[in-house]
Image (cartoon, rainbow, N blue to C red; front, top):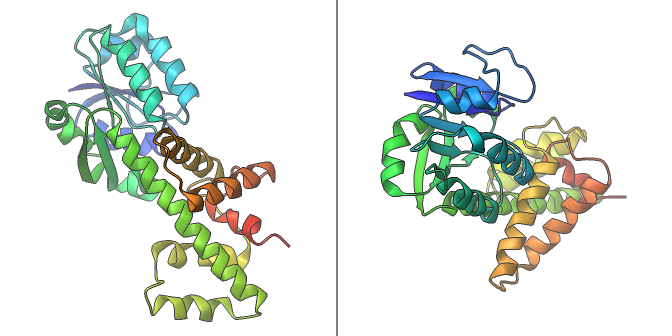
Length: 277
């Protein structure tokens, strides 16, 4: 299968590398990268090469710009799998534009971080036509081992946003309780161990406690990405008049974290906002 992979960042490069081991893949990024597969010279080359396009870009505006740049060159019948985390409304708007060129757009955002991308063990949520899902699932299986069909276009993105909104709220709960323990002069190592003995045990307590204890936040998933995703979740909730007070609070935390210059730090740096002296 001829594949063009666009967006070779922290996640995109290892994902593309895994696919390139089994398919005729070329890659492209706005920044030149050293790659174990051919690096394309232009969007036109990507469009001409591809039976399938895979994209992995940061934000709504990047995906819209990419679609507009590719539009003059796209071939009829191309399948485009966007694995970015963007708003479902942007995805659906771009889907309508691409349909005019007889290009099929699917959404397939991922969960887990770079180590899982390197190992090909991402979780992938797919939105789009079920027959297209069955056609591209072997390619997705080169990047992930937990792949689920969520429903029509936009459904994969909705699932990813719900996932990250819950993660943001779980982390906020961890932040509040460890901050309270710290204010009570309790030993954080003992607190984390004790919490782990009961129903409070969770992944983000286990994996982020050392960040919090040391007040250092090496980035696995950034504040700015979590800020984007919790805002998407709140936008979805408001669109159906659903009140979610906990989510609204988390949105305020991440807005403050952005104002305080924490955008590039790991999202667990939100601890510093929740427990600001």
